[in-house]
Image 1 (tube, rainbow, N blue to C red):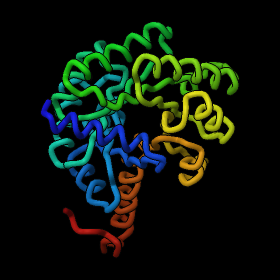
Image 2: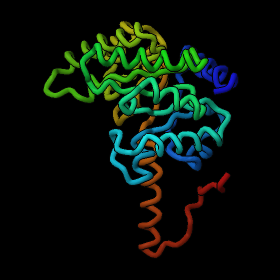
Image 3: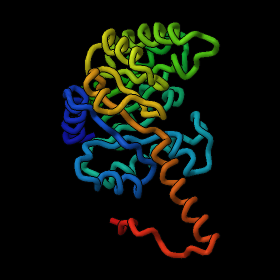
Image 4: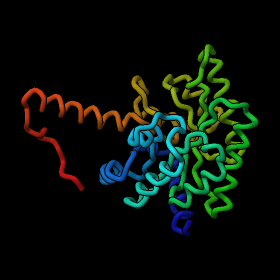
Length: 261
């Protein structure tokens, strides 16, 4: 960790606290990081654990070795001057140590999933992660504390999921996380309730089909949106479409292909 890492973390936190919605397109290797970072107006990058695991042939869910995940994260950090947040899944058995190693790789924020573990256990994981960041000299580390209240609904009603997300989100904020990530939330009423309970610029979401327009999310006080594995799926869909054209005898490249940077 360097002083620059701490300063970059503060800058990243400020991007979340600003009233302008932080829009992050997730990346999975150095090439995708360069491509996204080269787009004018991009202010930060975030990795997607699912996408990095898929790159190496692993299923999502901490099946990829942590050393391999962190190596790729470090390669992403090395090709950009932008703040980078890393998807650290559930912390690989030791959230504090994993956050410390991620900071050593140069990241200034990270996702941490609760997996719907008992709330006291999930809170301790957040505390361990933020404690490790402070000990590393990065007190403004942007822990994106994720609750799977909607992901693991398991027969619960949407209203029950919402109440659980509020309870867990407030507990994570109390434990020191600056923002709370609630994936699978798409309904306006749910977004409004979460912002009302957690506070403006405290909620982060993933863009899904049927999501509210970004301008509306910004107006509602959402801090950040990201795209998770969808960005890799968009890229791979384009690759499949090229393969289909080649198969069908259309050998020319699309006219809108940009040169590599």
